[in-house]
Length: 363
Image (cartoon, rainbow, N blue to C red; front, side):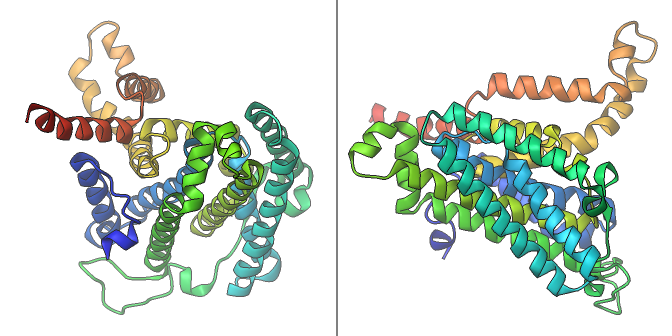
């Protein structure tokens, strides 16, 4: 069953497997074992980021294309659901319609950008996607009567997903089981399904062709594969998955704004996570998202705990200060890229393969 679920594409490293199992176990148990909105916020962000980064990895890691418009699709999904819920009211039909319209828009834009730019070099595709993403960000701010402009949109969600909706009259392990817990598990399960779907996609014959195109597009074309069609199709699939991630994020936050969707910083975060985790592995997206969100959330608190130990020491007391947490975050990322140039998952996989080869060569 596990073979079928993971399409025989296992992490191929005990350490990576252990990290993934710990993360999934923590994700599933956190709302009931720890409780509270802050811990659920952390794990929902990890789940959604893992899907967003994995969908970006379909392009960069498996096809060798870099798209700066990927978070634009994420934003379109978020705004589609938000605008529908705000204008139609807090109903399931609004969520469905908002998502369908957003997904169709993503498909059309991704197909148009792909057909227009992928006939030439992939760098041209990157430049076009950057221009399109900037245009959408400007449009969101211009049409403020619909999108809320810089202020964004606050909206209501269906009653079943609200904290006031009680699912179990008695709390489990002291934690009330309400609509927020239901939303949390629904998003985590949906992200898990999307991840399995992407795993199946990259291990299908279609996925193998994508990898062949990444390695040598001229040879793939000589073998009879239509390079343009494969690139446009995977670009559309990645766009719709990013759109779904954006819609889930909007439902969880009950807010959408340009800073959490269309901002270039979101795109840079996605790039960083895929590099840290390891390109072309998909599992790297999960590990990278977990480490990134954990560091972003808890690093400042960890530095605040260490700061009293160096108080009074010149220079060190200034550097080890909670306000410098972004500096230390940058240092950690530089170190991780330096020591794990193939990404954490890529490096650990290669090490595991080398260890397995050594006894065989001695024998």
